[in-house]
Length: 403
Ligand code: ATP
Ligand code: MG
Ligand code: MG
Image (cartoon, rainbow, N blue to C red; front, side, top):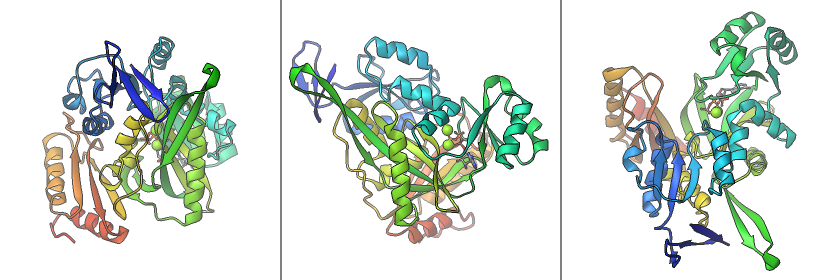
């Protein structure tokens, strides 16, 4: 049982004698993919025990998790979870972060858009579509290309199809499984860069006089990142983003306002579009550590994983500033199925090991598939030019020369 008392944490052991520190802390995480695995790695440094709840026995986080289940804080590394059960658990008094209400909003992208537009967050225009007539109307209103999205269960762009013209509406809707599962459209965002801002929120109950409890929220932001998406999947993240100071401030402000409208503690990532005319539009928010923040493990004093743990168990937030001037994260995506895919990945890892400032993360997924996230490589260095040159050298297949 953990009690939050201002910024200090004190745990009460079974026999109710107070135990200070975090060694009694047990955190349960729904989902055992690579994000869960990196949460476990950060937790082990802080003596926080993590129980992973995942239907897959050999999921990437399984080998690193603690298998003794006891009462503790519950969190997620994926938003596609059964939210009705979470709400029930919350009612039974389970300490869950972020709140089930947040997961309910985020896991339905249409609901998410409605929520953020009500909070005055700038977004691409959007509209629910229930039939072809509605889809055509949306096309007339927003023009083409038109982004058609599934409301639920979307990740890595699976759930997005672009219709370049009215003629493509029918095939796009079919590719998404028809209208039955819930679709909506977004006006095309003419972005020049995609940016991400990671915000950590710590909420703690402060006991005031007369037993009046008030919730306070502290927040802290990481440096803003820019990332490159190809075929809907993130390939490269650069930190810090190479954008003017004004854009940095605007992006941080939009991200902060969006995240502040959600309940519960933890790390949140706001995915943003920077448009040609200098506007910032929100794409979506992830209520958890995010692919765009993998580099923080090597490049920041406190990684996004450690920060998430600190926030959800109620410890003071750590320093999110970068301890290296520049970082690039390269996603190791499956290039082929099976053994040949593993061979290509191992070749790349071999080259990465010869690059100064490079760290390899392999997720230990049992199966290799095309475009599947199998691992990532972070390269840090004294300037963005230097880390870019190191990345290019790593990607050159015929040479293992390094900078
Ligand atoms: P994630 O893995 O980040 O959860 P997802 O499946 O939820 O991805 P989105 O983030 O909705 O997918 O979109 C994936 C990518 O598609 C975006 O990063 C962006 O490159 C592009 N995209 C999404 N919406 C739009 C839009 N309205 N206009 C233009 N491009 C878009
Ligand atoms: Mg998403
Ligand atoms: Mg996204």
